[in-house]
Amino acid sequence: MGKEGNLTQKEYQIAVIPGDGIGPEVVREGLKVLREVATRCGFRFRSAEYDFGGERYLRTGETLPSSALEELKDMDAIYLGAVGHPRVEPGILEKGILLKIRFGLDQYINLRPVKLYPGVWTPLKDKGPEDIDFVVVRENTEGLYLGIGGFIREGGADEIAIQEMVNTRRGVERCIRYAFEYTRKRNRKKKLTLSDKANILTYTHNLWRRVFKEVGEEFPDIERECVFVDATCMWMVKNPEWFDVIVTCNMFGDIITDLGAMIQGGMGIAAGGNINPQGVSMFEPIHGSAPKYTGKNAANPLAAISAAQMMLEHLRETEGAELIEEAIKRTLSSGKIKDLSARSGLKTDEIGDMVVQFLGKIS
Image (cartoon, rainbow, N blue to C red; front, side, top):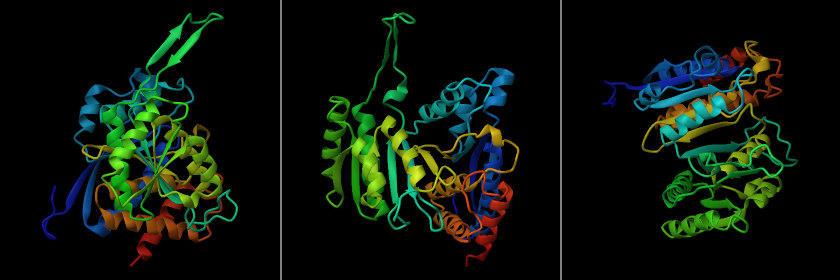
């Protein structure tokens, strides 16, 4: 799939999992924008759509077959809409699809930019786009999410529930190393913050701190600091401009990235990537399936479009990624989108069309 001069276009194989609820609607707009950018930037992509989600599970009892996981390994990237169905018990789809992909494809990094765009409201008083622009690198395949544990004397008055946090030296080191390399590549403040709870989680987070110190010595150009996770949450609200890149464990990353979504304007603009630097990565808006808006053409697709932008950046289609981000900025700065939620007053396809129109105006 190489490119030789202008004679051969790059072609990417993209697995598309629209999923549940508003997922298919926002993915549709993301693909619309991708097609426009591909034409402008001289690459092609073929999309293979998979119907994994609640409806398939209710129909067949199947979440993600192992054969499909093998197919996904041959893709260049995965583009996901949303997972979650009101008639399916919570956890079944999340574990059976999302976690199975993350673990099965060893997507050991969850990458979450927290960036406030011009024209977007933030609940933080006196903070603007110049203050809110950092990235969270979350370990994605270990910790509490391994699901190791169980019940003792289940159902009785003396019942005990156990859930173990498991971190390996290999898993911690590759996450921290990725974070240092990403901080250097980002080349903004060149500052990496380890968010942990080493004063309470004595063993696991002592490992994180030791590895952070040892790997950090290989990156003398990167400023590093350790901050407890509760303090991280406080400073994200009071002084978000202090942060450049944050690296943290699976559970803490899950929590602080949702806080990050709120300070950047809400779930309607927040996107993330599940990254395997040596394999296949998956990109998605971080919002849920929002079942009550299903089929109403009301959901804001900007988070899904941002996920497509992250996907192009990962595929090293830098020009295309920059075009999408600039078009998103212009769309948000136009003043036409008053609300990033499904109550914006604009239809899903109207917002997608706006992004495409602004793409056409970028020279």
